[in-house]
Image (cartoon, rainbow over all chains, first blue to last red; front, side, top):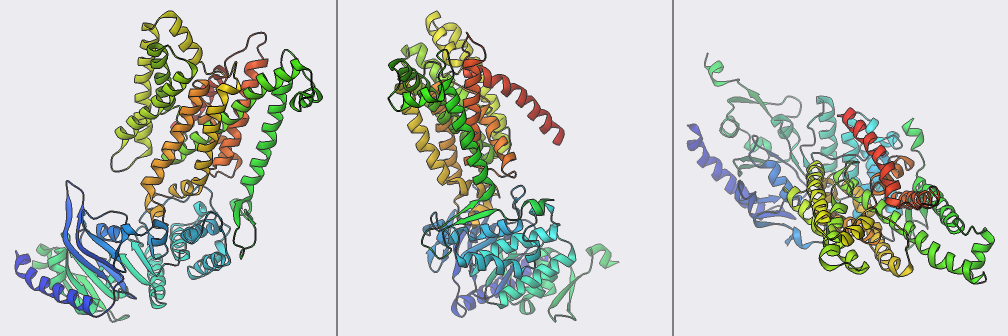
Length: 289
Length: 349
């Protein structure tokens, strides 16, 4: 198969860009020598990852490649069986949970809104890490919640019940909750799944503006074209390893996509954003005909 | 409809810039105040009523030490400990039920369904039959039995975390086995110990004294206070483990702590008064409906206390000259409620 012949250069590219990352941009959040997975099934071994500050990093890869597992380990939801994830050089496990939650936010893939809770109440819950038993509501909390709702365009929905909202609105409420947490780093686990295309774009635009206002974002996305349009830094994974990393325009190539996804394709220039646009050729036997 | 009903919902006690301020749910505060009034009325009623009927004035005189010696003894040594125990154990059962129903996200997930008080029952039976069974031994046996059962159920249900439905099914299975074991124990024991066991198993506050009530009550009050401190975390866990973890709540540890508290509460109340079913099952659900469908520990405590006080009042006074064990009253109402709950759950799925 082609895989073996391509793997070498792709790996070389990955290693070189790794060194680049470590040397140039600063990275508060890093994973070193990670072994991820469960006892029966190890997904990643000796995985090194650096999340560059101020970038919108998107992790892509085929199903089961370990991208969600990697994100979950960065979000301290799963503990690596070996190696460690560090924030500012200190292992995540060494931070008190609440203190870590002021630095590292997460939009989980699935969350359940408590019955009958209002939008404003749910968004307010994002302030939990900043509160204490005896100081339950400060001026900063009020402004953070108002800002988060304004940024996600849900201010008018503040007093509505979350269960009465549409899927797109509900996802924006969860994003607002994560924003109210005011963490410099925000991890997003497949944030656009289950949304229609218009809501997907709307949400990705929101993430871009959040990133431009200084937040470090890391997302797992399925759609290659969304990833290459919105990411400032792309991490491509396959079988638990990072096979390529860098700005989308520099790393997306037909060889890489075919090698990683097994999908023969053309790469053209996106006429709107001038980022790579992946055009699938269809199944190999159809293309041959 | 919902938007209007949910508009202004919290009160801020203290100033946003102050060193100390509290944010409370308005509805919750109102409901709890009402429940407190309700409980106070029930306590007063149970102090007045009985073979020696006393007026409010006579009860007050007895409490302040100015009544007749007989009235003082009846009120302070018989009726008051019984009422206080009903109040505290009712609240404890309510909180225990609220904790488990929240953790397993299912109204059937109450500790009396998932075998924890059957386990306490087994512990008590073993001590009655093997050790003879003073009150303290029975209480100790019940606590150990309840905790051990909880551990077994938890271990059997654990598969990379606890999932509500598996916990309920395993709990019901363990409960059935323990029930069979309990019957066997009662049959094999001597007639005398079987009688003691049967009396205990009915769940009764008859003959409650300060000496019996105080240890369990004090213990329950402490455990309830600890549970209240975890109330906010518990509500956050309902959003899912990932979401709670992202907000800085260690999910698995919090769940274990809550389960430990919920189990000790039910075990302590079973130890003090025998198995009293239904309160832990129904109180949290009633409280939820009163508080805009929110899970609320304080509300569940209030409803639980009011229910047990009322049930005990019925058990004492509505079948005179006979005094029923309160467990008989709660289990009868509980049976009806459980059937309703099962039908509703079945319809929903």
